Image (cartoon, rainbow, N blue to C red):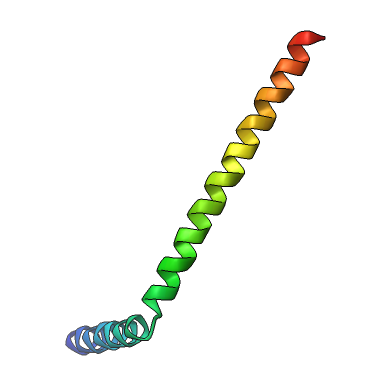
Length: 63
């Protein structure tokens, strides 16, 4: 039972170390720029979608 606990501690510390190394190597400026572009693109798409839905509703009301 004690050896399983020690092995789990080693495993969790290895996972933590690998996670820290991977997070340190990320390009945070690039990720932030991509997130900003994605948010702007999503906003533009949403505006077009809402406008198209409104136009469709007005066309259906006229018929």
